[in-house]
Image (tube, rainbow, N blue to C red; front, top):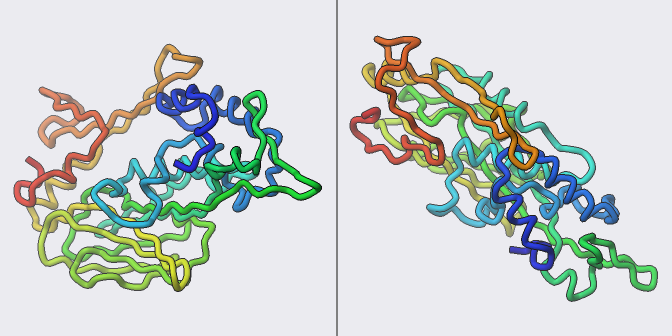
Length: 314
């Protein structure tokens, strides 16, 4: 990875691996001290990956290709947003929780509400120290100025991701909505294309547009996004959803909407931080408000993405 971590202590890596929530005070203070002497106005785009609380590995979601390792689900989308927001060295570009809340509020029947995160950011080059583009003293980074000339230590990277608000969309005709409020970017691409997985391939889209898809079968659909940065560069991202549209599947899908969502905060802290979590309850139609022989899923993967085409909700 093109990271300043090539020459800083391993403990910041350990802190990030075990961080479970947004702006952890201890990590942010550590990073603030490390980078406090840099001239922030010289950092292109105002986003420095080395300064971020990296909830998502941007090397995975770099837009260079689509593969089995970089599908973007709602969790990955959230983590990319958090990573970009926390990389801001001056002004935070957006509030992640506000974006996710808006996406859920925009929900309507037969619609896929698509959130997009598309950013160009800066990072400190791997050779910055050896080539004397920066100085590193006492766990702090400094600009290097030689004979009155500032040395540029920064390289540029991209990240691209998108996700619908739900894993399951109900209906043979789905309208994919690209709302201005949940389309976040610092890029001005030439063209953007979206493939709904209905057999029509990539189609041109723009911010604020709605794109209709007509599905002839139920099951998992492969959504793809293609962004033309210029004539010689494109970025790619992809995601999966499950389409159901017969009456039985529709009823089951509606029954599987969350009945209750409960936010939980630990009573005791660890390392000065209280862990946070979320419980989502799905009560059966016969036992609303009661858990009878509960089946518990701990998030870490989306089981619906692995479900067979038939017997969708088994």
